Amino acid sequence: MERENVLLFLTTVQIAATALYTAWKLRKNKRWRSRRWWVRPIMARREEHGDFATLFQELKEDPVLFFRYTRMNVSTFYELLHLISPHITKRSARPSISAEQRLAITLRFLATGDQVLSIALAFRIGESTAHEIIKETCILAVVCLHNFLKTKNDEQPAQARQYCPPKFVDTDTGNGEVVPGEWRENREDNNLLPMGNIGAHRAAKEAYEIRDRLASYFITPTGQVPWQYDYIQGGKNQN
Image 1 (spheres, rainbow, N blue to C red):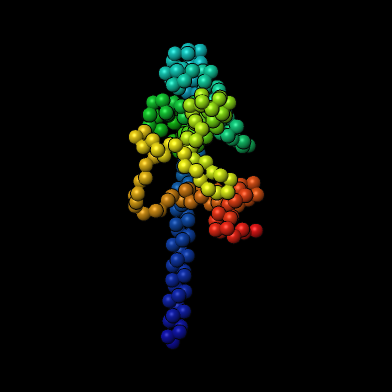
Image 2 (cartoon, rainbow, N blue to C red):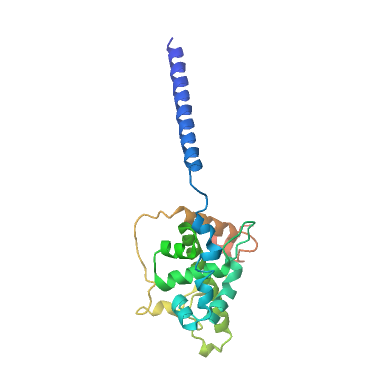
């Protein structure tokens, strides 16, 4: 009798759980079906009435206002676009936001410090889309500009290099030994000071994903350096 009661109880719990899950699923699907639209009408008219299609194109004819709008002249804008375009161009079967528009959105945000929502409405894109565009474009622009400046700087004689003078940054000897750069000695002008313990070391999920992607790359033949396993294993090579 006791065994039958236990089985009856477990069956009842299972039925109740199934019913609750089904009700939750139906409610969730109903919420998505009841949306008024998948793309807001004002966003659908981006190609005709958005700032990039109208105002931004007209500003190219007015160098003064274009500079005030982006904080750079037209030629500099296109030079920056040439550097970063291969990295921010999206290839998709659906119409996507062009690299030029992505750069314009980012520069407008940086030039004004306005709320992302205001920028998104002006260019007629979603607020979350604007967030992603600005974040991605800023990161890739920094990398591209660093590589550009470093390349141009290295073409100059050692005495004339200003962006990254010789012995300024840390270097390695080729076997994993780091040679400290002169930047560590400029304490008065150096903003990269030790922070110490700032709390629990719990990063965001995105940070862990980036860490794992980098780790996977650094153990491939393309990403690894000859001395890394000797350095990690303390002289014991790992083949």
